[in-house]
Length: 374
Image 1 (tube, rainbow, N blue to C red):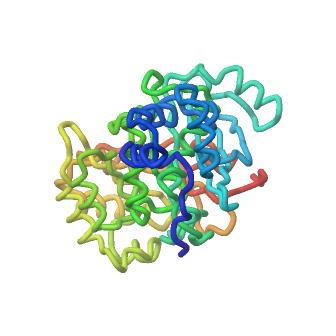
Image 2 (tube, one colour; image 1 turned 60 degrees about the horizontal axis):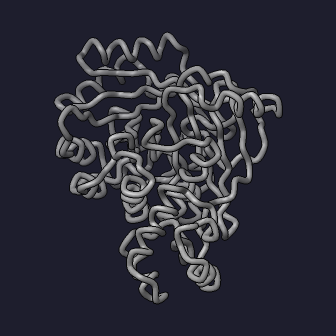
């Protein structure tokens, strides 16, 4: 896998790094805080827009090759349910997808057409809260057999600036200003965040300290990189943890998720039990239901025993289909029966409503789609 590209952008630099930059440029130290505020809180798109800096320093930044470094929106698709899928392009030509999911009256915002896009603009603020689904890698190396992203393989990790840049670009496009506007982040887009841990956790800190999104409104999902679960638990600033489980026994999970060969369910559930939860916090287990593969009543009872004693909830996700995926979406009655068994056993269990399925924006569907094929 390629290493991270060399960063010549301001996005992704922490305050101490900006301090070094301004000192090397012969500027007073307070300029670093001005830069930090402009890049993250004000979300400027170019150095020329940072009016608090002197014109001379702005020119110096440009001459040294520094840009803010926001990704380019190469595509924007609007679902019938109001979800927006963005295709984000970076300076080296690679791209990822980022998803905006509003909750509230804007739920029927558009149909993907130009008229739908116009309607989406008109109603974009008619929501109570919204979620941004963020990518951490170009592609994914984990190769889950029910996920379209896994078919891409992995091209490279994203830098912290590229991770933050996705969120800033979406916030700018949607004219949203956290923390005033309630925005949640889920690191569940393209890639496995824990295989790009340093950039991911740096991005989290910048989002909290700079952009103003509280860590309590962030969740990171892992396929089960066990050592990094322990690392996350030791972080002073961290999102909530979700573990993509998808099977209640090793034989089935290894078939669906080859990563289970390296970190078995025994190791994974041990890490889950050891994870230091905050007051009133629950760990989340995500479970994608595949028709007549992992959705039987016996599978549900196995799952209850597997996670017994963990302060957790379960999110059930009926498979979001896609080309090249050799599984089917289960009937609703099978999903309901699976959920009932878990709830009756005392496990808080929720069915996740698919968002943006018609534009390939739902869970497991992200694959840098340039055209609508659904």
